[in-house]
Length: 60
Image: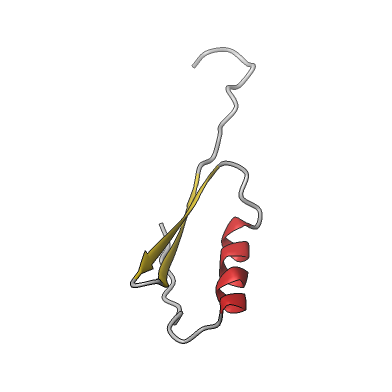
């Protein structure tokens, strides 16, 4: 898991929407959680799941 600290304080709505778009970009399975405190977006969390396909070969 990787955490990146970005300063969202004082950012306009367009900047926050770009961050949300970035979190959604390329996401196939998972979720994006937006945390709001006192009417301000304070955290954007991306959780991605990787689906593994079972091998079609012999059982190990």
